[in-house]
Length: 415
Image (cartoon, rainbow, N blue to C red; front, side, top):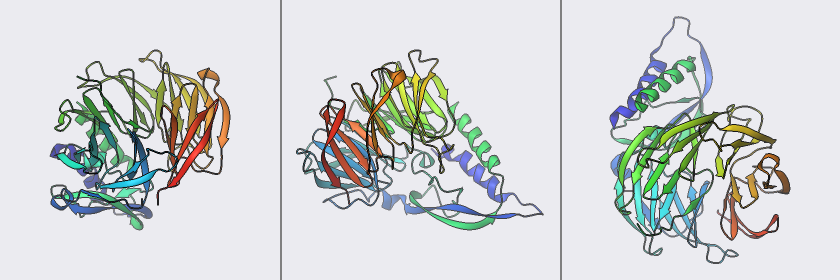
């Protein structure tokens, strides 16, 4: 797997080895990796009693349980048998974790470069049953913090170390041409490119893992890894392929994968499930971008401002009736959007600090705002059959559906 790192180390070598007689300096935000030896890292998975969440990430629902990620640290398991009184029951310490997916009581989790499999058939006696080593590119999983301008890998030995997090600090550095770094890295990525009814869980719109039939699809910033999970306890890596640029999310619908990137949406066909085929790309201006799909329309939220791209924040509705030619059909202004979800004719949009917004999408070209639940911070939602899950500001919210409305069932503090 060493070839995957070649283009990145070449880029960093170029960046740090260029010297000019007229040296210029600037203050930059430098991301320094937090390291652990691979041997210690792979022995550090633990199944423990509940603990407070340090930084809540993504949510996932399976059976009567809700799984909440603790960014880069592990997964908290909440018993949701009684939605009015959810209860934390277990914590899976999985260093370097960002995403999970579950099928028939087998939980798949990324752990930096590895894929780890757990048997959760007895939630009180969870066991680790498999670990596939070095199936993910570390640069494709443990992401450089968005506020960082430079990553300093001076002390990182990719043969023996694992990056488990980042520390960002402001430093005075020699000024470099960042375009050289970006172009070289992109060239390297282009070169790299050349049974029974199942019970599968549900993730939010910020997910990067999707299970479709006997395959687990995972996506990082530029690469898609496909695993055959016909033998649930012993998955095999089937294929790794170039997926796009700056991929952030993945959604599956009707035998297609929809990848949300900072610059657009990529559509892949699953006609050949072991090797998804690129169909088309919808390009938009730069912005943070989750996507969900319902019928002939894809719904994207683009969060501008800060370090996500442009200043504008919008909901875009894309006509995908012709998968080879997605077309912008409508656009609506938002304030600070993150995740979104769909239940029947209701579209739920997490508008960050502006709260949770409900839209009627009976006519996708003329979505109408029905309600804005304010005074909460919303990040992502999962519209289940009988209730709506939402996470934001270290709190798990649950709502029951009403006619064109929702009503709070419970709010559960995660720390």
